[in-house]
Amino acid sequence: MASFGRHPCCLLLAAALLLSHLAAAGLAATGPGDIAVYWGRHKDEGTLREACDTGAYTTVIISFLSAFGHGTYTLDLSGHPVAGVGDDIKYCQSKGILVLLSIGGQGGEYWLPSSQSAADVADYLWNAFLAGGRAGVPRPFGDAQVNGVDFFIDQGATEHYDELARRLYGYNKYYRGGGITLTATPRCAYPDNRLAAALATGLFGRIHVRMFGGDLQCEWGQFDSWNKWAAAYPGSRVFVGVVASPEADKDAYLFQKDLYYGILQFAEKLPNYGGLMIWDRYYDKKNHYISSS
Image (cartoon, rainbow, N blue to C red; front, side, top):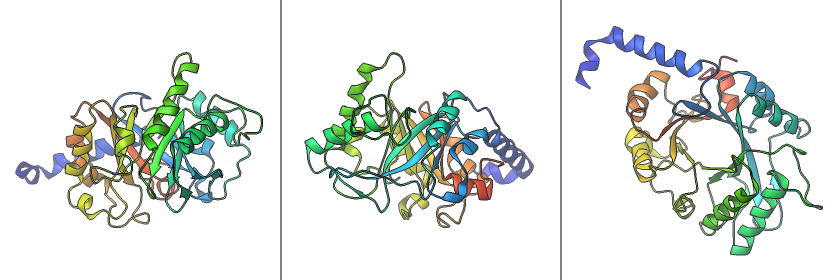
């Protein structure tokens, strides 16, 4: 680390090259370097199609299904009209962009009080957003199918999310090629007890570690916190989750050079490094953290 101070010009050049790489369009849809962004938290962020047209993201995560587990389901897209989202999903997928639906979030009304509730929620997700379809189950996005489900479980009891994951994964038997992508977005302090049992199933292909949200332990040791997740789940691709603007979380915000020197230069070397998760499209659009538009 001491050698960094002896070559400031080289450091600036490396940082510039990194930022150019992060903002470049056409990032590979697989392998290290993927960039996932949350969409659906601010009406002024633009449409899903517009997010995909930036060329900056390889995954867009629609957020949130904010109420479930008690017979009531609420899709909260922060004032975005739902009409047209289905067509945008298809458009994004035609460009090779993965589209996920995130369940949970902050301030919603969700929990899984029983094994039956886990089964009911899995059935609902399958028929309302995935490849299923049953009379009496509305499909908010029409015949468009999301590629998978993201678990953003930030409140409530911890039980039965492992059962929900197994139920959802079980629907893969109905797919020919591909299938349902399961991702999790835990808090960065390891372990996240709300998701520990679900992650122990080994069914989650990706883990987006939130390096924000008021966790001082992570703010003072970002790479150490992230590295615990990478070491614990070598079979999953582990993402570094950051806020795109200090407006989102001034204490956790990392300037791009700090992101690189504090985390990425180490994380990139690990075989299960997945890329970046950006919170969120609205802040990225305002601050041009990753996207130029």
